[in-house]
Image (cartoon, helix red, strand yellow):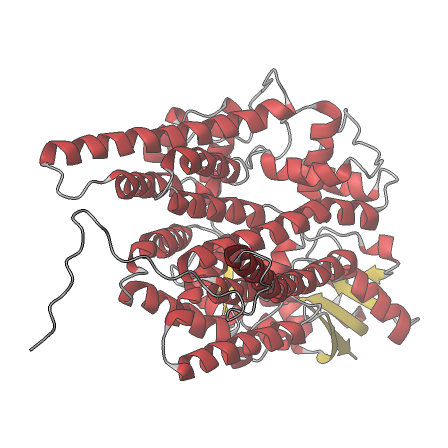
Length: 584
Protein backbone atom coordinates (compact mmCIF):
# COMPACT_ATOMS: atom_id res chain seq x y z
CA UNK A 1 0.00 0.00 0.00
CA UNK A 2 1.07 3.55 -0.65
CA UNK A 3 1.87 5.74 2.34
CA UNK A 4 -0.80 8.36 3.07
CA UNK A 5 -0.04 11.83 1.72
CA UNK A 6 0.25 14.74 4.08
CA UNK A 7 -2.67 17.06 3.33
CA UNK A 8 -1.73 20.43 1.90
CA UNK A 9 -3.21 23.53 3.54
CA UNK A 10 -6.28 24.87 1.79
CA UNK A 11 -5.41 27.52 -0.79
CA UNK A 12 -1.74 26.61 -0.84
CA UNK A 13 -0.10 26.52 -4.23
CA UNK A 14 2.59 24.13 -5.46
CA UNK A 15 5.67 23.74 -3.34
CA UNK A 16 8.15 26.54 -3.84
CA UNK A 17 11.32 25.51 -5.70
CA UNK A 18 14.57 25.47 -3.81
CA UNK A 19 16.70 28.56 -4.43
CA UNK A 20 19.64 27.89 -6.74
CA UNK A 21 23.03 27.24 -5.18
CA UNK A 22 25.40 29.96 -6.46
CA UNK A 23 28.39 27.68 -6.14
CA UNK A 24 26.71 24.90 -8.11
CA UNK A 25 25.71 27.35 -10.80
CA UNK A 26 29.26 28.59 -11.16
CA UNK A 27 28.41 32.06 -9.83
CA UNK A 28 30.16 34.14 -7.28
CA UNK A 29 28.61 33.51 -3.83
CA UNK A 30 28.50 37.23 -3.07
CA UNK A 31 26.33 37.97 -6.15
CA UNK A 32 22.64 37.12 -6.53
CA UNK A 33 22.17 34.09 -8.81
CA UNK A 34 19.51 35.75 -10.95
CA UNK A 35 21.69 38.74 -11.77
CA UNK A 36 24.65 36.53 -12.63
CA UNK A 37 22.53 34.32 -14.89
CA UNK A 38 21.13 37.40 -16.65
CA UNK A 39 24.64 38.74 -17.15
CA UNK A 40 25.74 35.49 -18.75
CA UNK A 41 22.63 35.39 -20.97
CA UNK A 42 23.20 38.95 -22.21
CA UNK A 43 26.86 38.21 -22.90
CA UNK A 44 25.96 35.05 -24.80
CA UNK A 45 23.31 36.92 -26.84
CA UNK A 46 25.83 39.61 -27.75
CA UNK A 47 28.37 37.01 -28.83
CA UNK A 48 25.73 35.44 -31.09
CA UNK A 49 24.67 38.79 -32.57
CA UNK A 50 28.15 39.81 -33.68
CA UNK A 51 28.64 37.01 -36.25
CA UNK A 52 25.13 37.63 -37.60
CA UNK A 53 25.66 41.38 -37.89
CA UNK A 54 29.03 40.74 -39.54
CA UNK A 55 27.39 38.49 -42.15
CA UNK A 56 24.74 41.13 -42.89
CA UNK A 57 27.34 43.86 -43.25
CA UNK A 58 29.51 41.66 -45.48
CA UNK A 59 26.61 40.89 -47.83
CA UNK A 60 25.58 44.53 -48.12
CA UNK A 61 29.22 45.65 -48.46
CA UNK A 62 29.87 43.38 -51.45
CA UNK A 63 26.62 44.61 -53.00
CA UNK A 64 27.68 48.21 -52.44
CA UNK A 65 31.07 47.56 -54.06
CA UNK A 66 29.40 45.95 -57.06
CA UNK A 67 26.93 48.80 -57.53
CA UNK A 68 29.42 51.61 -57.01
CA UNK A 69 31.85 49.96 -59.45
CA UNK A 70 29.09 49.71 -62.06
CA UNK A 71 28.05 53.31 -61.39
CA UNK A 72 31.60 54.57 -61.90
CA UNK A 73 32.39 52.53 -65.02
CA UNK A 74 29.11 52.75 -66.94
CA UNK A 75 28.21 55.63 -69.23
CA UNK A 76 24.63 56.96 -69.21
CA UNK A 77 21.99 54.45 -70.19
CA UNK A 78 19.10 55.45 -72.45
CA UNK A 79 16.66 56.60 -69.73
CA UNK A 80 19.06 58.11 -67.19
CA UNK A 81 19.80 61.45 -68.91
CA UNK A 82 16.06 62.17 -69.06
CA UNK A 83 15.65 61.61 -65.32
CA UNK A 84 18.82 63.52 -64.43
CA UNK A 85 17.86 66.49 -66.61
CA UNK A 86 14.31 66.49 -65.19
CA UNK A 87 15.72 66.44 -61.66
CA UNK A 88 17.86 69.46 -62.55
CA UNK A 89 14.75 71.23 -63.84
CA UNK A 90 13.01 70.43 -60.54
CA UNK A 91 15.88 72.02 -58.63
CA UNK A 92 16.24 75.07 -60.88
CA UNK A 93 12.71 75.85 -62.08
CA UNK A 94 10.23 73.97 -59.88
CA UNK A 95 8.53 72.81 -63.06
CA UNK A 96 6.84 69.60 -64.20
CA UNK A 97 7.19 70.40 -67.89
CA UNK A 98 9.57 67.50 -68.61
CA UNK A 99 8.95 63.76 -68.20
CA UNK A 100 5.39 64.05 -66.83
CA UNK A 101 4.75 60.37 -67.62
CA UNK A 102 6.61 59.49 -64.43
CA UNK A 103 5.76 60.94 -60.98
CA UNK A 104 8.43 63.06 -59.30
CA UNK A 105 9.55 61.12 -56.21
CA UNK A 106 12.15 58.93 -57.94
CA UNK A 107 13.60 61.98 -59.65
CA UNK A 108 13.66 63.82 -56.33
CA UNK A 109 15.76 60.93 -54.97
CA UNK A 110 18.14 61.46 -57.90
CA UNK A 111 18.10 65.22 -57.21
CA UNK A 112 19.31 64.51 -53.65
CA UNK A 113 22.66 63.60 -55.19
CA UNK A 114 22.66 66.36 -57.77
CA UNK A 115 22.49 69.09 -55.12
CA UNK A 116 26.17 68.34 -54.47
CA UNK A 117 27.14 68.53 -58.14
CA UNK A 118 27.24 72.31 -58.61
CA UNK A 119 25.98 71.63 -62.12
CA UNK A 120 24.96 74.20 -64.65
CA UNK A 121 21.17 74.01 -64.97
CA UNK A 122 19.51 73.73 -68.37
CA UNK A 123 18.67 76.91 -70.23
CA UNK A 124 15.10 77.93 -69.25
CA UNK A 125 14.50 78.77 -72.90
CA UNK A 126 15.37 75.24 -74.03
CA UNK A 127 12.47 74.02 -76.12
CA UNK A 128 13.57 70.54 -77.25
CA UNK A 129 12.17 67.23 -76.10
CA UNK A 130 13.24 65.42 -72.96
CA UNK A 131 15.80 63.23 -74.78
CA UNK A 132 17.45 66.32 -76.24
CA UNK A 133 17.28 67.96 -72.82
CA UNK A 134 19.19 65.07 -71.28
CA UNK A 135 21.92 65.36 -73.91
CA UNK A 136 21.98 69.15 -73.40
CA UNK A 137 22.47 68.90 -69.63
CA UNK A 138 25.11 66.17 -69.75
CA UNK A 139 27.14 67.08 -72.83
CA UNK A 140 26.34 70.60 -73.99
CA UNK A 141 26.19 72.69 -70.82
CA UNK A 142 29.79 72.38 -69.64
CA UNK A 143 29.01 69.72 -67.03
CA UNK A 144 31.11 66.62 -66.34
CA UNK A 145 28.81 63.72 -67.36
CA UNK A 146 30.73 61.12 -65.35
CA UNK A 147 30.66 63.16 -62.14
CA UNK A 148 27.04 64.14 -62.63
CA UNK A 149 25.91 60.57 -63.29
CA UNK A 150 27.77 59.19 -60.27
CA UNK A 151 26.16 61.72 -57.93
CA UNK A 152 22.75 60.96 -59.46
CA UNK A 153 23.24 57.20 -59.00
CA UNK A 154 24.51 57.25 -55.40
CA UNK A 155 21.11 57.97 -53.75
CA UNK A 156 19.54 55.08 -55.68
CA UNK A 157 22.41 52.82 -54.55
CA UNK A 158 21.82 53.88 -50.93
CA UNK A 159 18.08 53.14 -51.27
CA UNK A 160 18.82 49.74 -52.80
CA UNK A 161 20.98 48.82 -49.81
CA UNK A 162 18.27 49.96 -47.39
CA UNK A 163 15.74 47.79 -49.20
CA UNK A 164 18.09 44.89 -48.53
CA UNK A 165 17.44 45.45 -44.83
CA UNK A 166 13.70 45.29 -45.57
CA UNK A 167 14.21 41.92 -47.28
CA UNK A 168 16.22 40.75 -44.26
CA UNK A 169 13.62 41.92 -41.75
CA UNK A 170 10.65 40.52 -43.71
CA UNK A 171 12.23 37.08 -44.11
CA UNK A 172 13.41 37.05 -40.50
CA UNK A 173 9.88 37.83 -39.32
CA UNK A 174 8.64 34.81 -41.26
CA UNK A 175 11.34 32.21 -40.71
CA UNK A 176 13.93 33.42 -38.24
CA UNK A 177 17.55 34.65 -38.46
CA UNK A 178 18.85 32.00 -40.85
CA UNK A 179 16.02 32.58 -43.29
CA UNK A 180 16.71 36.30 -43.13
CA UNK A 181 20.34 35.74 -44.14
CA UNK A 182 19.36 33.46 -47.03
CA UNK A 183 16.89 36.06 -48.33
CA UNK A 184 19.44 38.86 -48.00
CA UNK A 185 22.07 36.80 -49.83
CA UNK A 186 19.74 36.16 -52.77
CA UNK A 187 18.88 39.86 -52.87
CA UNK A 188 22.46 41.08 -52.54
CA UNK A 189 23.75 38.72 -55.25
CA UNK A 190 20.82 39.22 -57.65
CA UNK A 191 22.36 40.51 -60.92
CA UNK A 192 19.10 42.23 -61.87
CA UNK A 193 18.86 44.11 -58.57
CA UNK A 194 22.55 45.07 -58.65
CA UNK A 195 22.34 46.17 -62.29
CA UNK A 196 19.27 48.35 -61.90
CA UNK A 197 20.07 49.47 -58.37
CA UNK A 198 23.29 51.09 -59.63
CA UNK A 199 21.48 53.30 -62.15
CA UNK A 200 19.68 56.63 -61.77
CA UNK A 201 16.37 55.05 -62.82
CA UNK A 202 13.01 54.42 -61.17
CA UNK A 203 12.52 50.65 -61.27
CA UNK A 204 14.31 49.57 -58.09
CA UNK A 205 13.06 52.50 -55.94
CA UNK A 206 9.44 51.79 -56.92
CA UNK A 207 9.80 48.04 -56.31
CA UNK A 208 11.60 48.59 -53.00
CA UNK A 209 8.98 50.98 -51.66
CA UNK A 210 6.29 48.49 -52.69
CA UNK A 211 8.04 45.62 -50.91
CA UNK A 212 8.38 47.80 -47.81
CA UNK A 213 4.64 48.41 -47.90
CA UNK A 214 3.90 44.69 -48.16
CA UNK A 215 6.17 43.96 -45.19
CA UNK A 216 4.49 46.65 -43.07
CA UNK A 217 1.03 45.32 -43.94
CA UNK A 218 2.23 41.90 -42.76
CA UNK A 219 3.44 43.43 -39.50
CA UNK A 220 0.01 45.06 -39.10
CA UNK A 221 -1.31 41.61 -38.16
CA UNK A 222 -0.16 42.48 -34.63
CA UNK A 223 -0.35 46.28 -34.41
CA UNK A 224 -2.54 47.56 -37.25
CA UNK A 225 -2.88 51.13 -35.99
CA UNK A 226 0.91 51.51 -36.01
CA UNK A 227 1.88 49.67 -39.18
CA UNK A 228 -0.96 50.37 -41.62
CA UNK A 229 -0.26 54.13 -41.80
CA UNK A 230 3.42 53.35 -42.35
CA UNK A 231 2.44 50.86 -45.05
CA UNK A 232 0.34 53.59 -46.67
CA UNK A 233 3.31 55.94 -46.68
CA UNK A 234 5.50 53.32 -48.37
CA UNK A 235 2.74 52.51 -50.88
CA UNK A 236 2.37 56.20 -51.64
CA UNK A 237 6.13 56.48 -52.16
CA UNK A 238 5.94 53.62 -54.68
CA UNK A 239 3.01 55.22 -56.53
CA UNK A 240 4.82 58.57 -56.49
CA UNK A 241 7.80 56.90 -58.20
CA UNK A 242 6.19 54.76 -60.92
CA UNK A 243 2.58 54.46 -62.02
CA UNK A 244 2.98 50.76 -62.79
CA UNK A 245 2.49 49.95 -59.08
CA UNK A 246 -1.08 51.28 -59.03
CA UNK A 247 -2.64 47.81 -59.62
CA UNK A 248 -1.18 46.83 -56.24
CA UNK A 249 -3.40 49.27 -54.33
CA UNK A 250 -6.47 46.98 -54.26
CA UNK A 251 -4.25 43.99 -53.45
CA UNK A 252 -2.68 45.72 -50.46
CA UNK A 253 -6.08 47.03 -49.39
CA UNK A 254 -7.40 43.47 -49.16
CA UNK A 255 -4.26 42.38 -47.33
CA UNK A 256 -4.76 45.28 -44.93
CA UNK A 257 -8.28 44.09 -44.13
CA UNK A 258 -6.88 40.59 -43.60
CA UNK A 259 -4.23 41.90 -41.21
CA UNK A 260 -6.76 43.86 -39.13
CA UNK A 261 -9.03 40.83 -38.96
CA UNK A 262 -6.11 38.71 -37.72
CA UNK A 263 -5.13 41.30 -35.13
CA UNK A 264 -8.61 41.91 -33.71
CA UNK A 265 -10.41 38.62 -34.08
CA UNK A 266 -11.97 36.97 -31.03
CA UNK A 267 -12.47 33.18 -30.99
CA UNK A 268 -16.13 32.23 -30.85
CA UNK A 269 -17.39 35.66 -31.90
CA UNK A 270 -20.83 35.79 -33.48
CA UNK A 271 -21.81 36.85 -36.96
CA UNK A 272 -22.49 40.46 -35.98
CA UNK A 273 -19.06 40.76 -34.36
CA UNK A 274 -17.37 39.30 -37.44
CA UNK A 275 -19.23 41.74 -39.69
CA UNK A 276 -18.23 44.62 -37.47
CA UNK A 277 -14.62 43.47 -37.58
CA UNK A 278 -14.67 43.41 -41.38
CA UNK A 279 -16.08 46.95 -41.44
CA UNK A 280 -13.38 48.08 -39.01
CA UNK A 281 -10.72 46.43 -41.16
CA UNK A 282 -12.06 48.13 -44.29
CA UNK A 283 -11.96 51.51 -42.53
CA UNK A 284 -8.35 50.94 -41.44
CA UNK A 285 -7.32 49.82 -44.95
CA UNK A 286 -9.07 52.86 -46.42
CA UNK A 287 -7.03 55.01 -44.06
CA UNK A 288 -3.88 53.34 -45.38
CA UNK A 289 -4.90 54.24 -48.94
CA UNK A 290 -5.63 57.84 -47.90
CA UNK A 291 -2.11 58.09 -46.48
CA UNK A 292 -0.77 56.78 -49.81
CA UNK A 293 -2.74 59.41 -51.73
CA UNK A 294 -1.43 62.12 -49.40
CA UNK A 295 2.17 61.02 -50.05
CA UNK A 296 1.64 61.28 -53.82
CA UNK A 297 0.28 64.81 -53.41
CA UNK A 298 3.20 65.69 -51.12
CA UNK A 299 5.71 64.57 -53.76
CA UNK A 300 4.22 67.00 -56.27
CA UNK A 301 3.95 69.83 -53.73
CA UNK A 302 7.64 69.45 -52.86
CA UNK A 303 8.51 70.21 -56.48
CA UNK A 304 6.02 73.08 -56.87
CA UNK A 305 3.85 74.13 -53.91
CA UNK A 306 1.56 75.98 -56.33
CA UNK A 307 1.15 72.94 -58.65
CA UNK A 308 1.43 75.01 -61.80
CA UNK A 309 0.66 72.80 -64.75
CA UNK A 310 -0.01 73.22 -68.43
CA UNK A 311 -0.75 69.99 -70.24
CA UNK A 312 1.80 69.37 -73.01
CA UNK A 313 0.73 68.66 -76.55
CA UNK A 314 1.66 64.98 -76.39
CA UNK A 315 -1.07 64.08 -73.86
CA UNK A 316 -3.39 61.76 -75.80
CA UNK A 317 -7.16 61.65 -75.51
CA UNK A 318 -7.72 58.31 -73.78
CA UNK A 319 -11.24 56.89 -73.87
CA UNK A 320 -12.89 53.86 -72.35
CA UNK A 321 -11.96 52.28 -69.03
CA UNK A 322 -8.43 53.64 -69.09
CA UNK A 323 -9.65 57.17 -69.69
CA UNK A 324 -12.16 56.81 -66.85
CA UNK A 325 -9.43 55.60 -64.47
CA UNK A 326 -7.14 58.50 -65.40
CA UNK A 327 -9.97 60.98 -64.87
CA UNK A 328 -11.22 59.63 -61.52
CA UNK A 329 -8.02 58.94 -59.58
CA UNK A 330 -7.62 61.37 -56.64
CA UNK A 331 -4.18 62.52 -57.73
CA UNK A 332 -2.84 65.86 -59.03
CA UNK A 333 -3.60 66.79 -62.64
CA UNK A 334 0.07 66.30 -63.74
CA UNK A 335 -0.14 62.72 -62.42
CA UNK A 336 -3.33 62.00 -64.32
CA UNK A 337 -1.97 63.50 -67.54
CA UNK A 338 1.14 61.38 -67.06
CA UNK A 339 -1.11 58.33 -66.83
CA UNK A 340 -2.71 59.30 -70.14
CA UNK A 341 0.74 59.48 -71.74
CA UNK A 342 1.57 56.04 -70.34
CA UNK A 343 -1.70 54.64 -71.65
CA UNK A 344 -0.86 56.16 -75.02
CA UNK A 345 2.39 54.17 -75.08
CA UNK A 346 0.31 51.02 -74.72
CA UNK A 347 -1.36 51.72 -78.06
CA UNK A 348 1.98 52.01 -79.87
CA UNK A 349 3.57 49.08 -81.67
CA UNK A 350 6.96 48.21 -80.15
CA UNK A 351 9.56 45.77 -81.36
CA UNK A 352 10.67 42.89 -79.17
CA UNK A 353 13.47 40.34 -79.33
CA UNK A 354 13.38 36.95 -77.64
CA UNK A 355 15.55 33.88 -78.26
CA UNK A 356 16.81 35.28 -81.56
CA UNK A 357 13.39 36.24 -82.89
CA UNK A 358 12.60 39.86 -83.76
CA UNK A 359 8.88 40.59 -83.58
CA UNK A 360 6.40 43.45 -83.41
CA UNK A 361 3.98 43.85 -80.55
CA UNK A 362 4.33 42.00 -77.25
CA UNK A 363 4.35 38.41 -76.02
CA UNK A 364 2.59 37.49 -72.78
CA UNK A 365 5.36 35.06 -71.87
CA UNK A 366 8.21 37.49 -72.57
CA UNK A 367 8.87 38.51 -68.94
CA UNK A 368 8.70 34.96 -67.50
CA UNK A 369 11.07 33.79 -70.25
CA UNK A 370 13.44 36.73 -69.69
CA UNK A 371 13.44 36.08 -65.93
CA UNK A 372 14.27 32.45 -66.63
CA UNK A 373 17.32 33.59 -68.64
CA UNK A 374 18.51 36.32 -66.29
CA UNK A 375 18.01 34.73 -62.87
CA UNK A 376 20.79 32.62 -61.32
CA UNK A 377 19.91 28.93 -61.40
CA UNK A 378 20.37 28.59 -57.65
CA UNK A 379 17.91 31.43 -57.06
CA UNK A 380 15.32 29.79 -59.34
CA UNK A 381 15.61 26.58 -57.30
CA UNK A 382 15.34 28.38 -53.96
CA UNK A 383 12.41 30.52 -55.16
CA UNK A 384 10.56 27.35 -56.07
CA UNK A 385 11.41 25.55 -52.83
CA UNK A 386 10.48 28.60 -50.75
CA UNK A 387 7.16 29.13 -52.52
CA UNK A 388 6.21 25.48 -52.09
CA UNK A 389 7.17 25.66 -48.41
CA UNK A 390 5.04 28.76 -47.88
CA UNK A 391 2.05 26.90 -49.27
CA UNK A 392 2.75 23.55 -47.60
CA UNK A 393 3.97 24.38 -44.08
CA UNK A 394 1.08 25.26 -41.81
CA UNK A 395 2.83 27.93 -39.77
CA UNK A 396 3.95 29.74 -42.96
CA UNK A 397 0.70 29.43 -44.90
CA UNK A 398 -0.76 32.72 -43.57
CA UNK A 399 2.24 34.54 -45.11
CA UNK A 400 1.66 33.17 -48.61
CA UNK A 401 -0.88 35.84 -49.66
CA UNK A 402 1.51 38.59 -48.53
CA UNK A 403 4.64 37.23 -50.18
CA UNK A 404 3.39 35.41 -53.27
CA UNK A 405 0.20 37.25 -54.29
CA UNK A 406 1.78 40.70 -54.86
CA UNK A 407 4.57 39.21 -57.00
CA UNK A 408 2.09 37.12 -59.00
CA UNK A 409 -0.31 40.03 -59.57
CA UNK A 410 2.41 42.49 -60.54
CA UNK A 411 4.02 39.99 -62.91
CA UNK A 412 0.63 39.16 -64.46
CA UNK A 413 -0.12 42.84 -65.02
CA UNK A 414 3.35 43.45 -66.46
CA UNK A 415 2.94 40.62 -68.98
CA UNK A 416 0.02 42.53 -70.51
CA UNK A 417 2.13 45.60 -71.30
CA UNK A 418 3.01 46.61 -74.83
CA UNK A 419 6.77 47.02 -74.21
CA UNK A 420 8.96 43.91 -74.09
CA UNK A 421 12.08 45.83 -73.16
CA UNK A 422 13.57 44.18 -70.09
CA UNK A 423 13.17 42.38 -66.78
CA UNK A 424 13.47 45.75 -65.04
CA UNK A 425 9.69 45.95 -65.44
CA UNK A 426 9.48 42.93 -63.11
CA UNK A 427 12.38 43.65 -60.73
CA UNK A 428 9.88 43.32 -57.88
CA UNK A 429 9.87 39.56 -58.51
CA UNK A 430 13.48 38.79 -57.45
CA UNK A 431 12.99 41.05 -54.42
CA UNK A 432 9.83 39.40 -53.14
CA UNK A 433 10.81 35.84 -54.05
CA UNK A 434 14.06 36.28 -52.13
CA UNK A 435 11.80 36.61 -49.08
CA UNK A 436 9.83 33.54 -50.15
CA UNK A 437 13.05 31.54 -50.55
CA UNK A 438 13.70 31.91 -46.83
CA UNK A 439 11.00 29.31 -46.30
CA UNK A 440 13.41 26.64 -47.51
CA UNK A 441 15.36 27.02 -44.26
CA UNK A 442 12.44 25.57 -42.29
CA UNK A 443 12.72 22.16 -43.94
CA UNK A 444 13.77 19.89 -41.08
CA UNK A 445 15.93 17.39 -42.88
CA UNK A 446 19.67 18.00 -42.79
CA UNK A 447 20.19 17.38 -46.55
CA UNK A 448 17.78 20.26 -47.23
CA UNK A 449 19.95 22.56 -45.12
CA UNK A 450 23.09 21.57 -47.01
CA UNK A 451 21.28 21.96 -50.33
CA UNK A 452 20.10 25.45 -49.38
CA UNK A 453 23.63 26.49 -48.41
CA UNK A 454 25.04 25.04 -51.64
CA UNK A 455 22.45 26.87 -53.78
CA UNK A 456 23.19 30.18 -52.05
CA UNK A 457 26.88 29.67 -52.77
CA UNK A 458 26.07 28.83 -56.38
CA UNK A 459 24.14 32.11 -56.69
CA UNK A 460 27.06 34.02 -55.19
CA UNK A 461 29.60 32.46 -57.56
CA UNK A 462 27.38 33.05 -60.59
CA UNK A 463 26.88 36.70 -59.63
CA UNK A 464 30.53 37.38 -58.82
CA UNK A 465 31.66 35.83 -62.10
CA UNK A 466 29.73 38.45 -64.07
CA UNK A 467 31.30 41.36 -62.15
CA UNK A 468 31.25 44.18 -63.21
CA UNK A 469 28.98 43.46 -66.21
CA UNK A 470 25.65 42.97 -64.47
CA UNK A 471 23.25 44.35 -67.08
CA UNK A 472 24.01 41.63 -69.69
CA UNK A 473 23.93 38.79 -67.14
CA UNK A 474 22.34 35.48 -68.05
CA UNK A 475 22.70 32.22 -66.16
CA UNK A 476 24.87 29.26 -67.08
CA UNK A 477 22.05 27.32 -68.71
CA UNK A 478 21.84 30.04 -71.37
CA UNK A 479 25.56 30.52 -71.91
CA UNK A 480 26.36 33.30 -69.48
CA UNK A 481 26.68 37.06 -70.13
CA UNK A 482 28.54 36.67 -73.42
CA UNK A 483 25.49 34.96 -74.99
CA UNK A 484 22.71 37.16 -73.67
CA UNK A 485 22.68 39.32 -76.82
CA UNK A 486 21.65 36.25 -78.82
CA UNK A 487 18.46 35.87 -76.78
CA UNK A 488 17.46 39.29 -75.41
CA UNK A 489 17.97 42.96 -76.18
CA UNK A 490 17.54 46.49 -74.81
CA UNK A 491 17.93 46.90 -71.03
CA UNK A 492 18.50 43.15 -70.63
CA UNK A 493 21.90 43.42 -72.26
CA UNK A 494 22.65 46.69 -74.05
CA UNK A 495 21.27 49.93 -72.68
CA UNK A 496 24.10 52.17 -73.85
CA UNK A 497 26.17 51.53 -70.72
CA UNK A 498 29.47 50.57 -72.39
CA UNK A 499 30.29 53.56 -74.57
CA UNK A 500 33.10 54.62 -72.25
CA UNK A 501 34.50 51.09 -72.16
CA UNK A 502 34.42 51.03 -75.96
CA UNK A 503 36.45 54.23 -76.07
CA UNK A 504 39.06 52.73 -73.73
CA UNK A 505 39.19 49.53 -75.79
CA UNK A 506 39.73 51.39 -79.06
CA UNK A 507 42.49 53.53 -77.56
CA UNK A 508 44.35 50.57 -76.08
CA UNK A 509 43.90 47.84 -78.65
CA UNK A 510 42.96 49.43 -81.97
CA UNK A 511 44.52 52.87 -82.18
CA UNK A 512 44.37 54.58 -85.56
CA UNK A 513 41.91 52.13 -87.13
CA UNK A 514 38.96 53.33 -89.18
CA UNK A 515 35.83 52.83 -87.07
CA UNK A 516 32.22 52.55 -88.21
CA UNK A 517 29.73 52.75 -85.35
CA UNK A 518 26.07 51.83 -84.93
CA UNK A 519 25.25 52.50 -81.31
CA UNK A 520 21.99 52.57 -79.37
CA UNK A 521 22.32 54.78 -76.35
CA UNK A 522 22.13 58.25 -74.88
CA UNK A 523 25.88 58.90 -74.79
CA UNK A 524 27.72 61.08 -77.29
CA UNK A 525 30.58 59.02 -78.81
CA UNK A 526 32.72 62.03 -79.72
CA UNK A 527 32.74 63.20 -76.10
CA UNK A 528 34.60 60.00 -75.15
CA UNK A 529 37.07 60.38 -77.99
CA UNK A 530 35.47 57.93 -80.41
CA UNK A 531 36.03 59.11 -83.96
CA UNK A 532 33.57 57.01 -85.92
CA UNK A 533 31.44 57.28 -89.03
CA UNK A 534 27.89 56.03 -89.57
CA UNK A 535 27.94 52.98 -91.88
CA UNK A 536 24.23 53.37 -92.59
CA UNK A 537 24.89 56.66 -94.40
CA UNK A 538 27.73 55.45 -96.64
CA UNK A 539 27.71 53.14 -99.69
CA UNK A 540 28.26 49.51 -98.73
CA UNK A 541 31.41 49.37 -100.81
CA UNK A 542 33.04 52.09 -98.70
CA UNK A 543 32.46 50.42 -95.32
CA UNK A 544 35.76 48.68 -94.59
CA UNK A 545 37.69 48.23 -91.36
CA UNK A 546 36.23 48.00 -87.89
CA UNK A 547 32.45 47.82 -87.71
CA UNK A 548 31.18 48.36 -84.14
CA UNK A 549 27.55 47.50 -83.44
CA UNK A 550 25.75 47.54 -80.09
CA UNK A 551 23.71 44.49 -79.14
CA UNK A 552 20.30 46.17 -79.32
CA UNK A 553 21.04 47.51 -82.80
CA UNK A 554 22.24 44.09 -83.97
CA UNK A 555 19.12 42.41 -82.58
CA UNK A 556 16.92 44.69 -84.67
CA UNK A 557 19.15 44.71 -87.73
CA UNK A 558 17.35 44.64 -91.06
CA UNK A 559 18.02 45.89 -94.56
CA UNK A 560 21.30 47.73 -94.79
CA UNK A 561 22.65 46.88 -91.32
CA UNK A 562 21.75 43.22 -91.76
CA UNK A 563 23.67 43.18 -95.04
CA UNK A 564 26.70 44.73 -93.33
CA UNK A 565 26.64 42.16 -90.52
CA UNK A 566 26.23 39.26 -92.94
CA UNK A 567 29.45 40.28 -94.71
CA UNK A 568 31.46 40.95 -91.53
CA UNK A 569 33.35 38.73 -89.10
CA UNK A 570 33.06 39.16 -85.29
CA UNK A 571 36.49 39.75 -83.76
CA UNK A 572 35.87 41.06 -80.24
CA UNK A 573 33.30 42.42 -77.81
CA UNK A 574 33.15 45.12 -75.14
CA UNK A 575 31.22 44.53 -71.94
CA UNK A 576 29.19 41.75 -73.60
CA UNK A 577 26.97 44.48 -75.05
CA UNK A 578 28.95 45.81 -78.04
CA UNK A 579 30.41 43.57 -80.75
CA UNK A 580 33.37 44.48 -82.95
CA UNK A 581 33.36 43.12 -86.51
CA UNK A 582 35.98 43.14 -89.25
CA UNK A 583 34.73 44.04 -92.71
CA UNK A 584 37.13 43.81 -95.61
